[in-house]
Image (cartoon, rainbow, N blue to C red; front, side):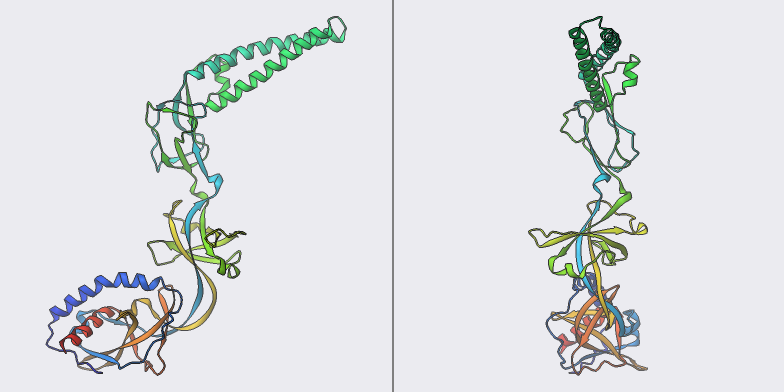
Length: 399
């Protein structure tokens, strides 16, 4: 069937069709980019649908053509997952002894260094701990001298064994008590050297255990917090990696050191690179196995823990007929490419040819034409193909 485009259609109508077509292009391109394997349905050679554009119409639609190329396209394994960090690169901060929040001025997203003050806690129990520490420390000093004195007397057989045992027991008990108080001071965040100098305080600081940034801040000044409450969550972004999931059937095709191309879930460029460093040895109930990948330093920009990603891994390559993915259009639920078949002084002729889509990689999609299809030396339309398709539909409706 040969369709002659109605030359009386105004340029205004054509431009309107172009605007409508462009509105649908992005969503249809996204759907096609998600397909990495051949569709079962084979392309069918049918009566060729053709259409002719004048040069003015061609220029108004801003049509561009490319070429059908033989390209090395890789068979790929599709994966998905999230951005993750090593366990030692995450930290939750709480108040081990509880208390009231006196100060807390840290906001989510704020950069922080190890040892930096995050908040100040006030607790009357701190005073009791410091008092008990000083009393026990003083008694320990006395008992240490007494222990040494009684030990010397015992060696000279001047005192009784019972007296020495009692002093020795008191000395060790007090020694243990002092160490226990020191651990409580450390938990509270109070320096024992300050207490030894006679400085008693009812407040203590909470310090950052790692460098990084504040992922979450769950604090309000004046709130009482218990030891179980997580006040801050810290993350160190210096060691982020991909935590992907692979289907059980694909494990035999994966190995340490393979290159992984990935992008965020709303991006189809796959222009970031990582490398597999760990493949899980167990499969979960969902038949998925974890695959961990180091991300190249230059590709870590803008990545945060928890972000969803999609990825693919090459699994062998072979040369295939390929066209820019933008050249593919959908018509009546099938995949087509629009080919420029002729250029004359009066204009350009195009035809619609059904194809079977293969894998898509780096902006190109593998295609297979129907047996007997005539495509040699024809140029695929790679820009604004939908404007031609819209005009073709309009011509069919007029008939």
